[in-house]
Image (tube, rainbow, N blue to C red; front, side):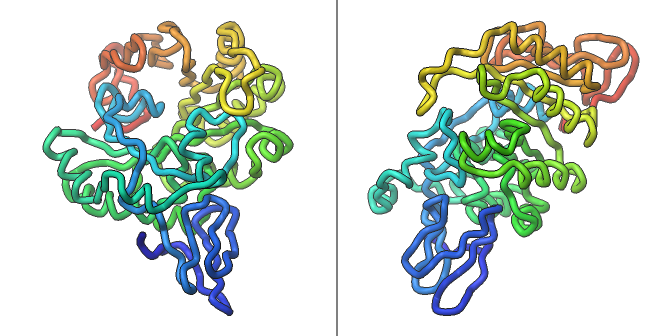
Length: 340
C-alpha cells in the first residue's frame, strides 16, 4: 500500500481521486469505483502497488500493438480492479473481483513485484518495453510511473493498454513515462457505454484526441459484438472519428467470444470483421487489422503507397519485419510507428 499522487484532500478527511474521469469523492475508510484506491485516515492509498496478479512475457503484437517495436517481447503486468464493469470482459476474474469481495491481505501474501525487480528482469533478458495491461492501468498509475522512473534510464519503453478514461491530470502525470497507448474504443454510442460498460463514451473520445495531440504513439481496438456494436453505420462512425484525428492510426477490429455476462451471444463471424475492414478502408484509414481470428491477409502491414508487405504476421507469435525502421524497401515510404 502506497500513498497515491493523483488526488486532492478535502474537508472532513474526504479526498477526491483525479486518476480517471469518475473523479470519485471518497469518504474516510471507503474506496473509489475501481476498488483499489482507498481513503485511509484522509489520505488516498493505492492498495495494489507492487502486487500485480498477472505477469507475463508477451509478444508486443498481443497488446495489440502492430507499429510499436514489432517482433519484440514486452513485459506485461496487471493488478486487480477496474473503473469500468464491461459485461463482456475477458479478464473479469481480476478486473471485477474488487466488486464481489476481495481480500487485500491475501493479495499481499502473493509475490511482490517491486519496480526494481521488474526493471532488473527486463535488463537481464533484454526486454525493450513494459506494458501495463490486463486490467485498467489508469487505476494504478502511481505504480506504473514508479516502474518507468527506473526503466527509462535503461532505454526501456512504457505501454498502456487502456479504456481511455484518463484525466488530464493523469496524462500529465504519465508524460515522459508512457510511450505508446492502445485504447479500447468499445462503441460509438453513449447508450452502449452506459448499459454494457457502466461508463461514458465522451471521456474516451477526449483521451484519444489528447494522446494524439501529445504526440504519443496510439493504436485503437474495437471488439465487434454481434448485434451490439457491429452495425455498419456505427463502424463507419468509428472509422471516420479515427481518420479525423489521423488516417495513420492503426485500428484493430477484433472478434468477440462469449464471456462473463454475455455468454448467450455468438462469436463474431469472420465475414463481419472483413466487412468492417472494408468499411474502415473506404473511410480513409490506412492501417486496419483483424484480431482474435486466424487471418493472415488482414494482419500484415502493407505499404499504403505501393502495396508491398512490410511486416508479415502468422499469428501474434510469428512476425517477420521486412521494412527496417519502418521504411518500405521498394518505394522508401516511411510507415508511422515506433521502430527502435
